[in-house]
Image (cartoon, rainbow, N blue to C red; front, side):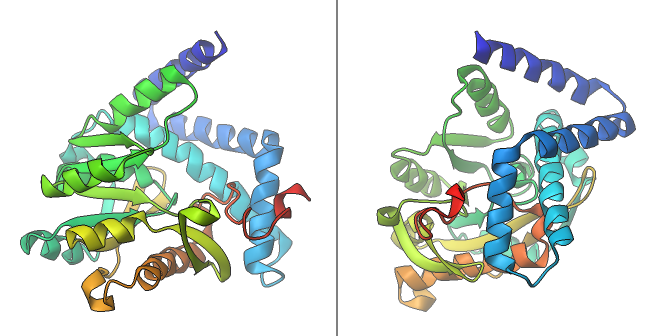
Length: 295
């Protein structure tokens, strides 16, 4: 019953998103973001611990709080965009988008390369399932099912509405390889925590971390290019999609750790350039710095 009530509230919110004037909707979203920041003490604490670890005393406490607040704004805007974009076609989406280094992906497509887009939970990463799918080629994503069945079914339907498909995280490797063989673009967000025995030890934001090597291994197996891409929030309903230099595993002798580190470097550089857009609230380093989040 609880899950269904939450789902009904979500559907009501979805109705507001689709029918209220954009200016009024922005006011509501800003209020929701402020409310989430105030009420979500647990994840606000995790965000502060992460910022202390990464920046130490190199930025002020006021700046750290500003980054955390902006991160909540980004999450709420992300939810809004996901709902709105589900009902928009490419022509309407392009009005919201500025492209940076687009030649990186267009040249890869021209050369008939298999493409793996890697990103972080940064800005509006859901644009992979909307804009990227409509603009360049159908995409295949991987995600963990939501605990709420009703929300999960709705989210999957939303993500798959623009030539995109969603695979469950467990046992997804075969599906991803098949997708590449069928000419689809793979999109993976690889910035979150993974267990020590499930990835490579690398440096992320200046600190030891474990990062999934799934994108690396699939790229090696399929001779794919790995292209880091970030969806940077410029303003309400305005984003820059930034493609970064492609990583060709063959240039690095298929060195799994090196290739995985290059992906971590791309994410670290973007996060440090504009930290306000990253999802600081997750426990990224819990297996490296034991007990860090139980302070």
